[in-house]
Image 1: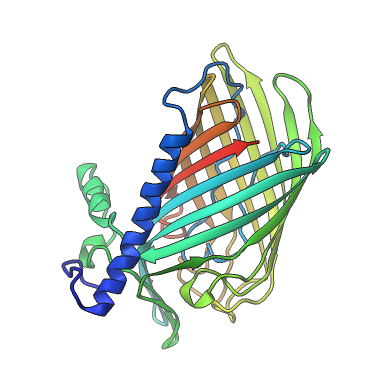
Image 2 (image 1 turned 30 degrees about the horizontal axis):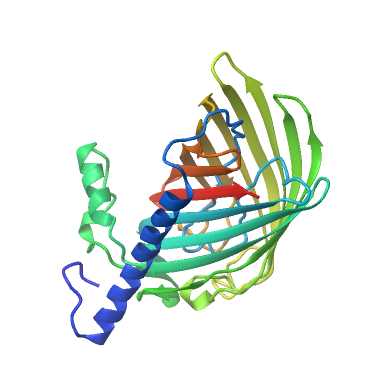
Length: 358
């Protein structure tokens, strides 16, 4: 859709504009809820645990698969719940072509995920993730182009295409394999998970290791790229080590694991059935209520039979930001994710996650 088209009485345009406004309304509602729940000044005396960003590759062809956020190296205590409400605003722009293929990933996604974890027994937790996604042309293209111009960064053909449009398309050997051009929203693929505490030191600067497992169910609409149509299983280890410093403390963490995927509905003849993934990160807490974090997430290719890196390539993305502690049990993550291996992950993802234990 051309960027100069506006909402009129035309039904198609009204439907498109409604789709654009709906995610913005959810974001505004989320911010309102945060302002009510969280006190204006962070509490003092918080023992701020540094855990990984709950992030993963949000590219339209990757988000549909069972690639998990790596989670914490420490499981939820017995009899307690941990709830995390995550909001990711993703801007994609990744066009490319070869003699036999063409791809255009241009659009924005607003993803909201409710994750609940429960300590079912000493050293064991179970959980569920329920995502809600909305695709549209968005509103960030102008801001990103201006940012690139201000700092002399390459635009990568951005200015050759209309702003704020939704166009996800992949063609191979003259056949269109993926096509999404109109905005919509809906539930994504629900994930069930569990974790087992393998090791944890009971000291002020603990080391911890947890074994995580998850199964992603095909509950999302694969035609809209809200799901893959496959059932995916993931198994991985997450570990962390904490060091006391003259000013605050430093936490190093990492994860490594693998996935097994059944055949899905999206690029069924090109999808791989095995993949590997991992993360490395560190966080520094100079104040009792503040931590600064940087994290690299990586995975191997999920598809084959393509010369385009948007389809058949491993990926590395970098997430930077931090955590604010508002009480002993309530924390807010703020982060920005960018593609280190260009075009293998979204241009930019703005990440917000509110986490609380009760």
